[in-house]
Length: 243
Image 1 (cartoon, rainbow, N blue to C red):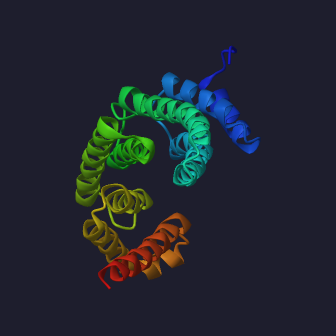
Image 2 (spheres, rainbow, N blue to C red; image 1 turned 90 degrees about the vertical axis):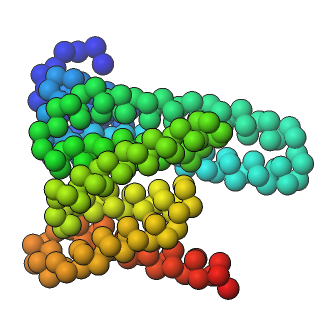
């Protein structure tokens, strides 16, 4: 992207690229408007989140597919096939690492230092922790340990801040609770802690359900539903393990 646009034009281009599903171009435009002025509106913040999520989602899916194939070929002792799969997996892991490092660098350099209120800071901390969590999905050894420790540290910072300063009905706070609980359950295997975070968020938010439904707070209601579904799934899994 060689043209020099105004900040407003970069925001508009980001929207256009999203509609056209040209997500790498979308992210380039996003990075431009962040650099020009890192104090983002809610829409600009959501564009940032959506842009990076779209470029990393396909790669995460590809890595999971190849990882499952690799296990099957290992069981069959197909050495050459395993080597071929590993070559592609390594390439995808480098791409995943680059995406995670890029957004975390933007968050640390521009967004958190210029966060004007608690919600923005929690949003950016959550986003930073999410990308450490994504690293945990494919990392091994010390890389996994570092990503896991960093994810937990940043999730905890955001969690403590949001619990102190934000209402439970806020979709950013609830989204953090959801993702933090997923991290504990899926990455760290701390299943009781995961359920406690999810259950506390769900129970507290249910007290305001009538008001949320009247105000048509769709984002918040969707997260409440996801918390409920995870609690049901996790409880059933844990009960199955005990039998």
